[in-house]
Image (cartoon, rainbow over all chains, first blue to last red; front, side, top):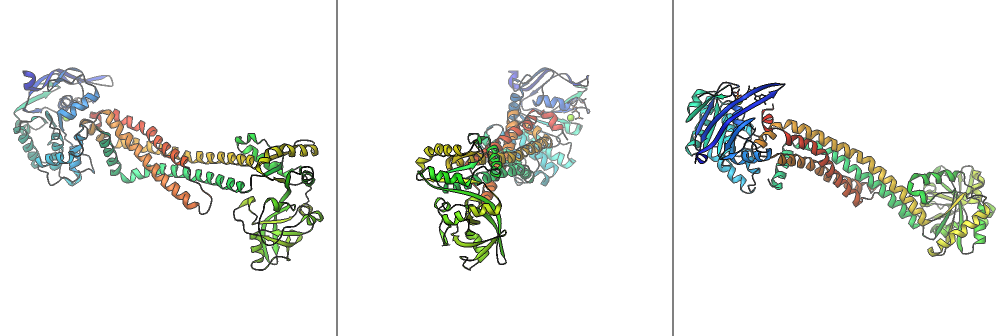
Length: 226
Length: 405
Ligand SMILES: Nc1ncnc2c1ncn2[C@@H]1O[C@H](COP(=O)(O)OP(=O)(O)OP(=O)(O)O)[C@@H](O)[C@H]1O
Ligand SMILES: [Mg+2]
């Protein structure tokens, strides 16, 4: 039963980086569970391991030890290829730097994940336009990133994260590069997505933003402290 | 991910960097175009020369100075240079031709030849042509029509008279509209009486009569201080008799010469010798051009490596969004192959178009094999030089790549 309730489960996850003989423990024995439909924020000082945690949850990286169960599937021992497929199907990333392709329209940026899951190319533009409509950019389909404001760019990135209908949306400081007004707009979108039943994990430095989530996980020196 | 979409992604990123893509492909464009052009020059030359030689007729048997190894002609220039050096030291005599004519009645005609460049002048007009000293039978073998007058006869050859038959171009240059027959032209310090003008033949080199001045061989030998001849050629009545006549000719010649300082060859042999020499030339030209194709390939690799570094964040992003290493590898390979194949196609169009255009001035033959080869090589170049950059891209770690500034 817990497998269906918990969309994500970390059991004693550690990540150790080896650099010039010095080992850095970025994550230290982290155990946590996130329920389907939950909106969780992760907060902690710089270098506390927030991004490292997001990378492991997002299958961009594998833990040095411990287990990661995503949607009931053990992902910590998967090959690069399998991880890529899990990222495509189950994860929606929103980055601090937006990471949109330059000289490429909003529509095409949002389409990117569909290129890698076998969606028939005839359906892609329609789907992308639909999701862009949901984030309020239905009239900006052909704009390139440099023709959009920071807030609009981040909304394109959110649309891109949503297009594969992922199990979890992972946002690493999504408002970090935005002014406060755009930040509020972006947070409104996340709250709306949460209301629609999406699972969201959001990393932030900012207590005000963290408090808008249902639950806050605090990290310090790679450990969960609450 | 379907190949169709991968191709779309690859073309899209090439289109985004339009001018860089074009400059990268330029190396291949130039390489392929020059392969096709140079090969066309080589094969055009071959077609031209062998075509002209075929016009000579297949009943001809030639006796040339020197012991030339015809079978070894495949080795390329060796036979040709042997032939050149032996012309200067020819041991053939006019009396050889006379003896052949006397002792081998099955031979229809025999002619001997000497050649020397000569400046011909008439009043204030001058023209540098080729003086051909030959015997009266020359005109039977190389049947040419006359504009006016006729060829010289046996008695003029025997008495070494100073008479000349002019090729069409020479006559026109020296005399314009005036009738040259009965006029005297000067060649060196000899004055020749013009007794015939040949019809225009067209073509170039040794196979056209247009720029030649024909004089009796005895007169030419006297004027140029020669006691040998450069070439003897004979004609049999049908090409079936060629093979049986060659040993008879060799026998007559060997009786008169202490050593084998001559070679008896027929048109077929000359044709195969010449075409094998020209084949070697064509391959050499193609090979030189192929080097530029290789340089073009290295250019693609260079730009693709730069492109992978420049697009590190893009690669990281694509991986984060679900592109597997194989997909990234394929995307970059397709980009490289598109650059090289696209360059190849443009190069083929430019090369063959250029060859067809130049064909108006020099003989050019665009060969299918050079097009197919150039295309295959350019595609191969794209794959070979695309692999290293594509592998590098596929192995990038997504986190490192996303962090890359
Ligand atoms: N690739 C790496 N190699 C070595 N050490 C690393 C690597 N990535 C992260 N670290 C280290 O792991 C620790 C946690 O880094 P992480 O990026 O997770 O912190 P963070 O909480 O996201 O910080 P910030 O709020 O500044 O983004 C840091 O001490 C960092 O130096
Ligand atoms: Mg971070």
